[in-house]
Image 1 (cartoon, rainbow, N blue to C red):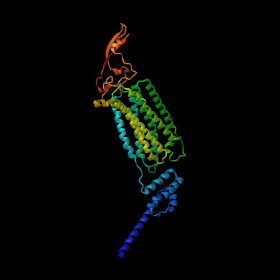
Image 2: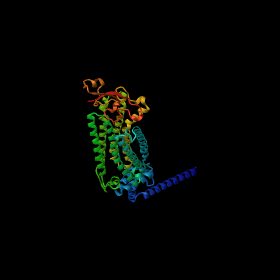
Image 3: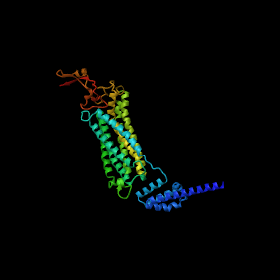
Image 4: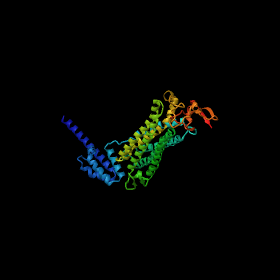
Length: 444
């Protein structure tokens, strides 16, 4: 029995010695892999820990000692060397690095497909090189092409390290991720302004009230000024320009304005413009003499606009959080996701009126225009449009030599011959006959 006990004791002792030897070898490998400046810090500070040098698990759990090593490394090494040391240390201690790049890929792919589908419906309703294709359609064509480019730039960033811990990303890839973010800022403002202008152009053609027209053009001017101002600010926010994506290596190699403050200001103005575009048409819509169902359908389009504003606010919060973080490539993910979603939903919102026309054809029982309280098989005429007088009123009191003429016309064309109001009239693309009426015209 004693022999068995001694044999077990010897085996356990040998196993412990082997484990200690393995831990010591791991520690030696760690020191050999670290940059020289970081290795000196580790060799100086690690022996002061209460853990045995052969107990790697205990050393990895000694957060106070590891914080001292990290501070020493940051003080004596370059940023690249510090990140390399952090990556090796965490890997040796078995810490799993963050990698959420796939989240961006999935989210962007879903929203991009939906946005493109909505725009394809718009192209189907208003094909290019036809009289139906208008200025706002051309603006949205440029915006959709730009958003595809924007997505490609960000997908490359996700492939190279966006959503990963910065110490786990190759230095050159960090440069590329930040450079792509820089390019994405220009595209973000450009696409955002284009979608706003497209919506405003549409609204100005639909709502002819003088007050709305005045407010619409004021907001449009605000969008253009916002675009020009922040394109200029972005272009000159760092000197040299490349310092924007290389300053993480050496903060003393260039100079930048307060980038965070500029980003917050741009986001705040963007939210204000979105709210303006959302609010100014509501009083006009509420006064339209249309059915409640039609009002709900129209207001639902503006509900999507309200969702864009909510997304912009979330994005602003992500920017504020990002400003306080040092793990750039990982914490940049949230800002990139919300920026992308905001642009995709903006495209969807701008295409919703055309999408409604499409639904009128495939689901007429729910989306067809009601003849009650409407004209031209569509919505009522705007209040400032003067309807021709009925025959009995037009003839009364006229001179004897007046000319009376009757004709069949589409009333929706009385106001403007070339305007096809997606909120106010049936589009010709569906091939359905338009309701006509008669009016009396006269010439003296």
